[in-house]
Figure (tube, rainbow, N blue to C red):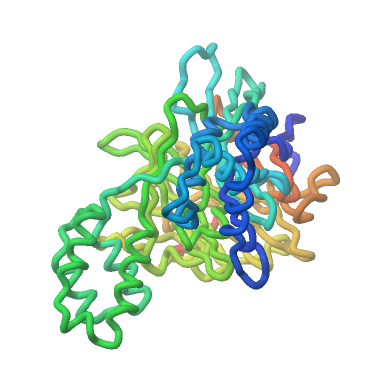
Length: 496
């Protein structure tokens, strides 16, 4: 191991159970046999007299009001979600409606179980810094009850030198508000193709839709489908598949007054219902200027799917599915710019090999070119990336992860040709960072894992998850890291 290159910092981010959000709670829906008890609960609340109703509502706001942003608005929203259970002839008072909303709400601690797998990008706000400093946004995988993951953030300042300061993460959290988005017909077509859903209904819809469309246009096209097509045996299931595929793209936005560390990207579609995992953020730059992009794994409890998000300010995010064979499996990481006019990404489409995939003209990620397969003892089970490639003067620096005996994760490194990333120029002959005694224990033992670092003032800054339970930071001099690599064979596109 070449772990002496990496210097671990003392600062550690640990899960904070006080970081909570308010979610809808419907009694009975958490039972093995779902039978809602909503109606009975509403009836019991409605039977309370005005004095008792007012007292209970005041107590609720006294207990929880300072822990959440606009708790009254949340109670109103949750009441609206169950108001169909109230008899039309019954007119509840405004206070009773709020109390109904309170009884259909609960707190969820987003990181009560674990905090791990960070990535790091330059923060959109660089004001007020001293010489040698860089403000960064750190994305975090937050794990709560039921192993449900969401994406959170922290703000930190790097420098001068190896100084690291992480801003306080206190304050009420806020979930993004789902917004409409301009959908892309090519992504809809690619999604239908992946589901092998090709019939006259889908062909008619794709023919009628423009290249970019909104929800109104989509529903208008569905509403004007010929009855002869809809009456076919596959008609209802095809409509369901069309809507499910279309819904994979959406946008979410946060209040301008919210701080970055208060924003939580929460599951918003059925495909994400069991979590958003391992976001790999990168600051992408092209002729249109910089934009933040990321990939993450959507999990519904049975299947995984790769999603991409984009944001110019880390306040409004647009989410789209990633399609094509190169986007299969976990661990897609985007390059920070085009290379030779190509949009490229690292991937692990076969589950165990680092590959390079390219976006084609139909917005599908092509079959991967293998770059690095398991070869050394510390990575014999599988290898993958630890975030987006980092551009240096001598090549693309790729942080890798390898899995060895006892499912022990360690971090290594590769160097790809700057102009032909299909070619591995050099590799680190051993691991860069491995679980030591301070890192090995946790929610998932024997794991160090990162979703992306950056270079500042000649140092590689590497945030990483330790034991899938907490977040730590390490620094490595870039020149020393590259000097420790060994040259790879020039033939072919692989290092082995």
